[in-house]
Length: 115
Length: 115
Image (cartoon, each protein chain N blue to C red):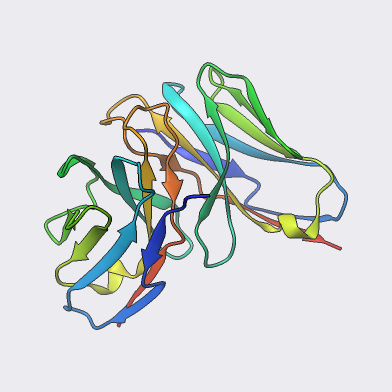
C-alpha cells in the first residue's frame, strides 16, 4: 500500500542552524501538508501546499519557515534559523485533492531536536 | 475558534474489555472527523474518517460515531487487546475561519491494555 515517507527520522541541530526536513508524498497525491507536535502537546497544522503555492498556513508558519517541491517527488520544509522551541515532531501528509471531505495520509514524522 | 477535547486523557483496562473514547468539539460546522492512532514516538495512522453527513463508521473491532449537532464523537473498541495500546487522537476539519485544508487535533487519549 502506498505511504508517505519522511527523512530523516531524527535530526539534531544547533540553535541558529538551518534544517530541511524531507517528505515523499504518495505518488498520485496533489495536496501536501506539514504539521508539528511539540512533546506532550497537540498536533498543530503548519501549512498546506498545492500547485507550487501555499494554499493555507497557520500563525505558527512565519518567515522562518518555507516549503518547496523541488522535484516531482519530494516536498520539503525548511526552517531558516532554528530556535529551541522548534524542537518537535514534524509530520508530512498528502491527499489526492484539496476537497474538504478528502482524507489526509500522514508520514511517520521527523523528530527535530534543537540544542 | 475550533477547539477539540478528548476525555479521558488516559485509560487503563484489562484485555478483553470493550471501551469508549470520547471526543468533543466546540463548533459543529465541520466537514468531517478523523480518528488516528499514534504509537510512542511514531507517526499517525488513520483509523476511521466520518463525513459530516454520516453517523458512524466501522472497521473491524472499531466503531466511530458522530453527533455533529452536539459536537461529539465516540470511538468504540470491542474486545480490546494489548496491541491496541497507543494514543488515540481525533481531528476535525473545520468549515469556519479556514481555507478548508487544516485538521484541528485533540490532545489524545492514552490507552493501555494489559494482558
